[in-house]
Length: 138
Image (tube, rainbow, N blue to C red):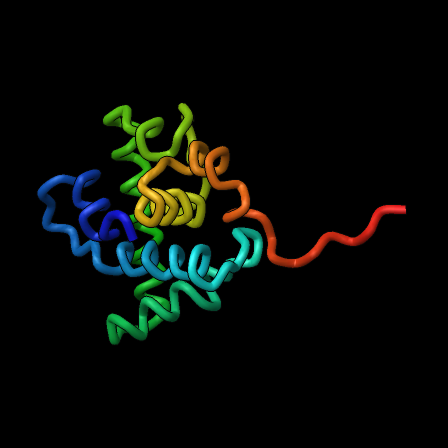
């Protein structure tokens, strides 16, 4: 991990009274799934794996942690857009970053590789390719 997820999120939020641990755990778990376990982005299971794992680590109910993570991710997206930081952390300009899952993936890539998502796709395409072999073409 290049950057601790908690530090990354604090650099976006600044000094805040928000408890960012649920989001930082989700980012850390996502980075582990992507880059250590080599699970592809399409195979990530947020509501069945990442959020419940974060809840176990926090010793909280999964439904509460899920809501907290999604609220924090939405607030983080709003902050990135308002402060003009989307390109720095994501790698290209955007007006909408999609659902909270997307933001968690973007932050996981930045935390693990130290590069914005779209730049990392260009620099390390092998890290984002599915580990499942493609079928032979006729």
